[in-house]
Image (tube, rainbow, N blue to C red; front, side, top):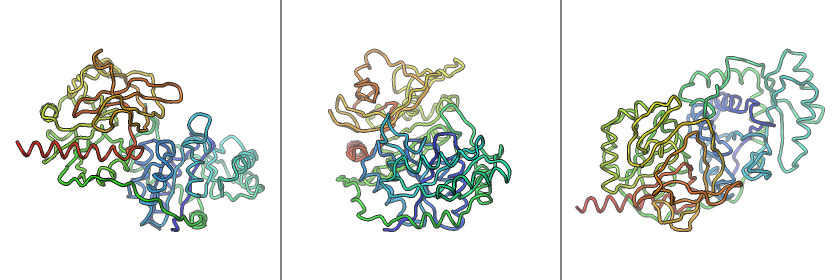
Length: 456
């Protein structure tokens, strides 16, 4: 199968990958069908890709996903497009710890994808050639095919940069001048949400179209070798019908891996979006709830004021309806959220305890092991995910025997989350493809509850 494709990488974070990648996707989407991907666990960059292409962007994470699953996700999403563009994470060779696991380079090699290197050239001239040379030769299995110079000065500066890069046999695909009007502002969890910046996409597209050789970009993507032996899709045994899972999707709850939702659909569920900020009830026929991550702390007053939805969630929880919550979803299910100004906001009140917003950032990959039977994992089963948050949950002492043991490169077996018969909540964002039983088990639990409720 021939899928034209390119990876957009950089020597480090901050070189302008997201702006350039989003601009490329938007500019090229005017000419061909483009599918966006993001290396790593990040939720926010893919929202820009989705805005730029009109198609849901996907995460390709070789730490959380097996090689077969990663390839299947890529094949599935790219089957009906003309071009796949994959935005890298951090520096090209940066992975988990001191290894390449989870790195942009590893994903590029797994997909035999050509790589373009974005270099911030604002404070250099001839040295750009040395950087490009080092990145080209560090791992010959990575196919570095060109350079994009970002934040350049005048024409003389551009001539110096081109001369240096071309002297080592690599083409320069474009030189983008510094433009203070085109940037993605920082916020406490990284980038601003893409829905707030529709204009940014249009600006980035025009900027890229003016300064990058799009024809050459397409030629390099077309030159990617054919991909053979597409992996078999994940097998879901469930034959469930009639299950409707309400998925919270608004400005407060917006972090989901698209593959998670696809696996729930494959297990027989209908995904029904709802807004905890705007809706005072769950969608009709709801038989399960998925509360993902996001920014509940920025919308705490509106969540707190939604008394009707609070009552409905508590009523359904008491009736045994399955509820899965991660990170922001966990925060919203607690009794109280205390924001950075010390203001207390009543939440949905299903989980005991209080969430405190702070300045300490918890982040990293996690391997999760279930210590007891849960909604998604049975005893001893594992799954992989990622944790990133500024808050802490002060759970009562009786809840300390958590359902998960969270392990990372730095710790083993830290308690994480809470489980009841029909509730699972934790800070870790699980990638369902790391354990295909997760989606099937969640949907089956919803079907059992629905059947028992209809039999009453």
